[in-house]
Length: 114
Length: 114
Image 1 (cartoon, rainbow over the protein chains, first blue to last red):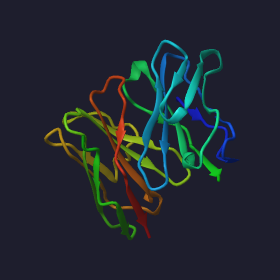
Image 2 (cartoon, rainbow over the protein chains, first blue to last red):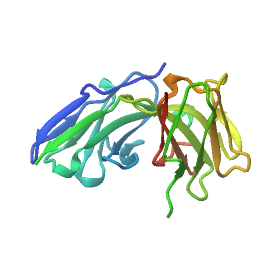
Image 3 (cartoon, helix red, strand yellow):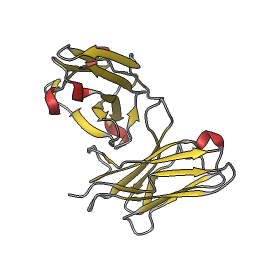
């Protein structure tokens, strides 16, 4: 069965620090990849997605992610975080052959200290 | 554009009682999804509808959970009878189609079973 792993459950960092969140998936076929974010008290919203083409994807709020097919990874990065980036981040994958069924990772809670 | 609407936002029931959740997707979205998110985990897909037909309900515990989308617009998810382990946030999402497409999430219903 397909699975998605997020290596860090909790991350604490200070404003202006760089952020990198790991995501690995187990499926070997062609996939689409997503990062969703849930800010405190808000619903899940899409940060960025990768379907094909340039493996470096830029999303909203200065986030980017890099798809490395050989490593089955889709890590999320932001060079300089702000207090407002405090949120829970979810990596998700769907298999192109299986329609739009998303499999989510367990999430990473990020706390940015002012 | 109005987002995905869900109600109620919170529900507390005792085990063996019944409960129902309602979802209204974004206007024009043909595909609707119900997810279960247990505390500390990522969302898990329960059922996917395309218009008023079920595309995938392989992870729906059919002995106690049921869902319908009779007119291909709004949807209801029911649990009867509820168990303690059903305590979770129930998320509804929608997308334009069941092909690779961004899913938009509602605010969720937080269910507590005592």
